[in-house]
Length: 343
Image (cartoon, rainbow, N blue to C red; front, top):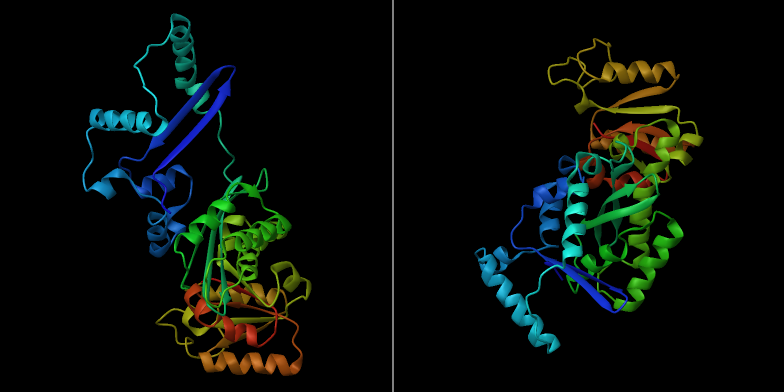
């Protein structure tokens, strides 16, 4: 289930043109950079997961084979497989002239620098979705200019049989329109064809996980750079749906205050400017929001229960990704739509 080569062929008149690549040795970090995937946004587990999706001759053999020996083996293998004899050949004079002409053209700085996507045209967005069988993490690269998913990595703490099923699902979702209906059909068709065994997780869970990532694109409508979207989590509703409810409550965790702050374990803030909480309080008060410092997990649960009993329509809060992941079900249990900002 791991990729080690890529091939392609086409017909031109009575000629069949075939080319291929074979991974002999490579560096996963360099590959991710070449694909314009910001490594700093990938967790170590996700980088390791990417390594599980590819391999190379060095990894399989334990050494880098001699290039001339490799050519001989490839030639003999093609001959045996297709029952043919491959003979060395040369380019014709016309082909040599055309090759030099094209080579000079495609080596020129004008061509090399010609295709350059705008900085925000291709972005990486991520999402976390909690299913009964475990956590699903989606990391996808989307081309905003064409609204297409360029590539996707699916990880999590769930079990899959066969293991390659997730890799095959990723391939199914590569280079497709970032359209919810297209994604749902692709995923459901894949499950119907392959019947992967993933305890506690259905095709609908993967559909919801991918769609949750795509929902982050909506934040751009609120003049929030998509690069910051991964620092925003939503609960019991999308970003747009929660904003539409005009949240009037802002929850600030005590741990966001400076360690030496005298107000760290107290409600309120004297707005000394020593940490970003001062700015959060200022912005919240400018919007006439009710601001509450959360002093513990138990305090958070009590606050959310009070919100529920009072019929609070929505709220905005702050928490780190680790806390959000651990207590996602607790947030969802309240039933109150919320926007949570990573700190």
